[in-house]
Image (cartoon, rainbow, N blue to C red; front, side, top):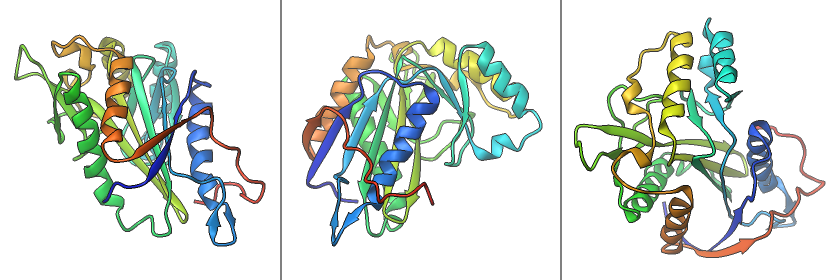
Length: 259
């Protein structure tokens, strides 16, 4: 995977709510379907950053489990909105102490580098966490929630045996482009552990609750704002960033989601 060119940056000022935030990501991906002759219409590569409302994003496999309804209700009791994402994986949680990073690009051959993106963006976001003093590493840790080979975890500065998953990633590909989404858990790790413990118990899935938490529990004083600036600093090493007020609307020729 190569880094090049200009990248629009949309710092979403407030969350529209769990469902609306997810739908906006899909809508921004759908913009890549818009064409005017041989040129893309309003589909410049885009980086979207925002602080989400408390959400538990379940995988489609979770929805098929007998305990899914109980898991969803447990999330609501904890103040988290349960959603089902179209990407794979298991349940993951994020909230206002988190930063969501959506990278959307039009691509005539979006499948070709789909696996390489997991490594490339994992390394990029690992570097951002290291920039704010977190001992971050790329790779899964035993017993983590929503396990994946390209998770990013942090190591405690005071207890090297303690490792916490800090970043989960997901990707969605359609015929005209791709969306790579990452959630970074920065503050308030206790509520993440609590809601995931209840959800995974209802689903009957084994995991280690000690793998969940936040960057601020690793012996580093860090805020979401600091992590956001570090992410942008690392992005500037590879792209020319252009901040925008908000993304252009979806062209009328773009139909409802097909992929």
